[in-house]
Image 1 (cartoon, rainbow, N blue to C red):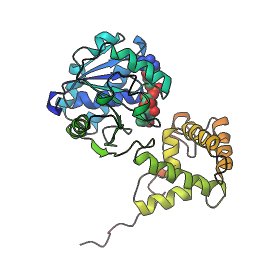
Image 2 (cartoon, helix red, strand yellow):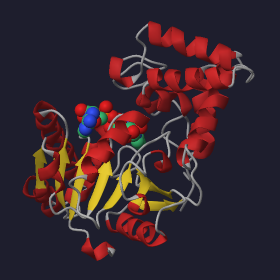
Image 3 (cartoon, rainbow, N blue to C red):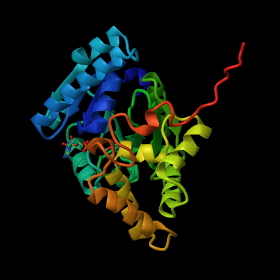
Length: 309
Ligand SMILES: NC(=O)c1ccc[n+]([C@@H]2O[C@H](COP(=O)([O-])OP(=O)(O)OC[C@H]3O[C@@H](n4cnc5c(N)ncnc54)[C@H](O)[C@@H]3O)[C@@H](O)[C@H]2O)c1
C-alpha cells in the first residue's frame, strides 16, 4: 500500500481525540467513518466536529471547500463490521487501558481488510502491547496526535520492532498529506517526544512551586517571556486538566517513591483536585477562567522592536 491508496479512514473511539483526528482527515478530503460503542456518543461527536469546523472556518484556518467536506465525508456506526468496510487506514483512540485496547483490536481483526494500516493513538503505552491482538503486527504502529490537532500539528510516528518499515514510511508520508509534521521515532518510547519534554518542564515547575521558590504565575512568566510562548507550564496544566497531571504524578510516585519532592508534588496537586480546581474545565485551577491572567496583555511585558524604522 502507498499513501496514494489511502481514501477511507476508520476512527475507533469517537471521544476527544477521535473527533479531532477524524475531522483532520475529512478537512483534507478523506472519507471518515466514526465508530463508537454508543449511538449517543456518535451523535455528540458529529455535533462537536461540526462546531469545531465552523470555528476553524470563522477564524480562517480552513476554507469553504474544506468545511463542506465535513458533512460530505463523515459517516458513523456502532457496527464493527460495517465500520471496517473498505477502509485503508485505522486510528484507534479508545481509553488508555491495555486490556481494552487488546479487546478492541482483536474484535476488529475479524472484519478489517487484510491490507489496512492499523494505528493506535495511545499516549503512555506502546504499540507492541497490542500489536499481536490486532492479528497483523507487521501493519501495526503508534500514531500519536496532539491537541488541537489542526494547529498543534505534530504527530509521533512510532513503530514497534515488528512493524514493516514500508508501513511506517506510508504513515510518515500520509501525515504530511494531512498537514501534520511527523516525528520519526526510532525506538518504542512510551512518552514520545513532545510529551517527554513537557513532562520534564512540568515536573520542574511543580518542584519550584512546592518549595515556594516562586509563585505559579511567576514561574509561568519566566518561561513565557524568554521562550516567547503564550502559555507557561501551569497554564498548560490547567488546559490539560489538573486532575490528569495529578493522576500521572501519583502513578509516577507509586513507581518511584524516592524521587525528591514527588510526594510533596502529589499532595500539592491533590489539594487542587479535592477543591475541584481542575483548570479550564471547572473555571478555576492555577488561574481563573474565562480570560485567565496569563492571556492578558500585561501578564508578560514583551520587548518589541519599537524603534524599528
Ligand atoms: N486527550 C488527550 O490529550 C490525548 C492526546 C493524545 C492521545 N490520547 C490517547 O487517546 C486515547 C483516547 O483518549 P481520549 O482523550 O480521546 O478519550 P475519551 O474518553 O475522550 O474518548 C474515548 C472514546 O472511546 C470510546 N470507547 C470506549 N470503549 C470503547 C470500545 N470498546 N470500542 C470503541 N470505542 C470505545 C468512548 O465511548 C469514548 O467516546 C487514549 O489512549 C489517550 O491516552 C489522548
